[in-house]
Length: 250
Image 1 (cartoon, rainbow, N blue to C red):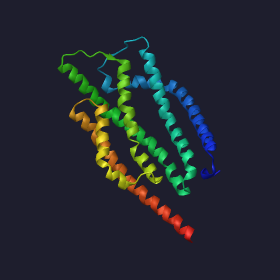
Image 2: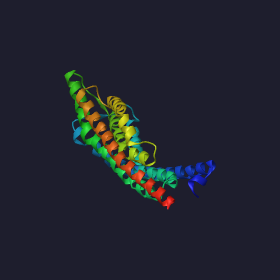
Image 3: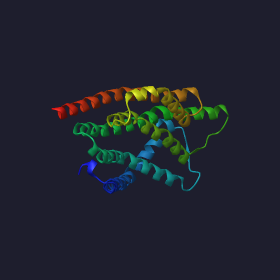
Image 4: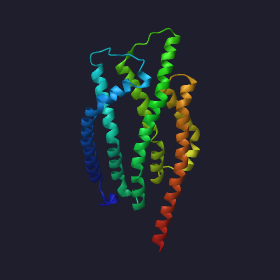
């Protein structure tokens, strides 16, 4: 059934089926997460950034909270390709055949960008922030007692937002191919976008210039890359529209 011929209730039913598929895969991913969570937690605890730290549990439930939180994060990462595919399947009937093939290729790119954002924040940004915090404590003659729950919460606070922010080029390209935004619009709002990125960087980093720049510069580069990718997508979308119009006229 063509999406234009579907009623509102048909759309709701279609959405319900896709949400149920996502839930089923998420439950399976949680089971997988339970199988691999312990070695991953041990790896993070024994990494270079944490080798000089002694993890403490301030509450009896802290180890369990860390275990469950990490399990759900792993499950979300595993489920993300399924979520993207279901989203694509829901909107693809409204796209041209060529657009469907192109946008389907965005899914593996999106997953890779998400993992790239996690890797950048964990291996580059997170160690720098931990060192900054510990050096600041030493300068203030404060003995740092590291809680394992707080340590992992801080880890999630840094890495997960960066994984999501690294999706920006794919999201921009997808919206461009749908005709919702244009590269001209993105260039026009550049200064406002930079301001928003500065605010985001200020939220997830300590109040010092170096760490702020370490976050802001990659985000601004991502925005510029997104504009460049949007231009490519916009030209291809316009070419596809002209091809369809020419075929209709013939």
